[in-house]
Amino acid sequence: MGLDIDVSFRYIDNGIFHIRQVISLAYVEVNANESVESALRRFKRKVQQEAIIKEIKKHSVYLKPGEKRRLKEAQAKKRMRKRLKRELSDL
Image 1 (spheres, rainbow, N blue to C red):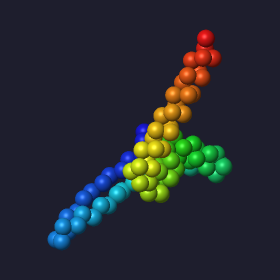
Image 2: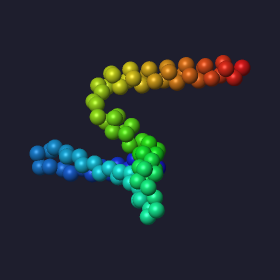
Image 3: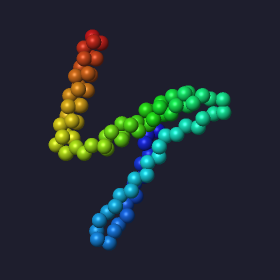
Image 4: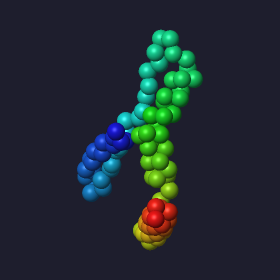
């Protein structure tokens, strides 16, 4: 139930590839006897479950390969510290 992204490539005469992305967005249908507030809550929950905001933020800023690597290493260290903390608390 992730974000569906269809990517299609189109070749141009001068050797340049143009990439077109089609993203299917979340939607909810409002029932006849449902309030707008509850429909909005369902929509927000669906957007959060499909990680749409997370995906948009991820692609909104360009990270250099070195920055991406450092960020990945920092996240791995954070996960390791969290795992060790959890294992120590279980003892």
